[in-house]
Length: 303
Image 1 (cartoon, rainbow, N blue to C red):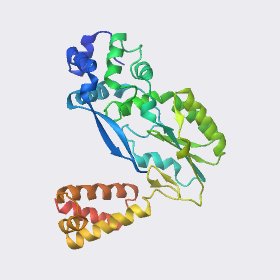
Image 2: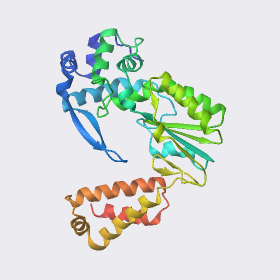
Image 3: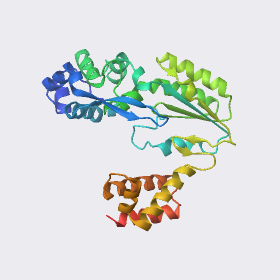
Image 4: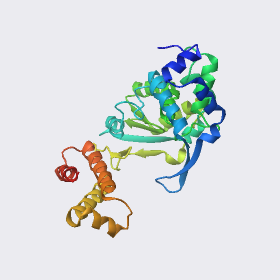
């Protein structure tokens, strides 16, 4: 692990002058804009998105510095090889699935935790720790639009993941975390698990989002990060049905005609790329789906 005691070594590895880093950190409000993003359940959340100058610096911090920090094997998002499928796989065919959610996750992460865990004193001199933490933090929260935030969140939850993971392992419970979504599966008492996780979250300064707690039994459809896990990994039937319907109309009448019928102001290329992405995602979950394989070949042949 590289140790940064001198600002010059940080400048060299990031490839960014110190005066640029300090200039950005001293006027953060001038480098963020508010962007509303629709939520699945309705309503919207406001993201703080950095401008190109700050975003470029944050990407360098993520790629050069944060990438070397240890994260737990229970974290399945924001890491090489991570995906919704990798997150869902351990929970396939289990008798009980419990899904928990951390309340206001990014907003609850403290500046002190960013400084102490993402940029520890064992690696960084104090002035450098303060500078880097400021570049990754904004207005009392971890900005969801910043390239550094995913890595920082995984680093901060490292100890929590291991405490929960060890507790679960002793009880033969599978545990994975995808950002702020916690999933548990096996044969166990949901109440005991929820009480334990609630306590562990409080120790880290987080709260459990009680309204999003779900206990799913075998006779119910068990969905983990958008994937049905009752018997084998599968995309939800309604997702596949809608996708097949769109593909049918596109192949029969043409993509341009389909877009006009829907009243969508998109180019054929953009809509085709979106369709291809959704088809490829469904095939990742179920690679044996012949209809979707044919649809993928048709979409690729159009390019």
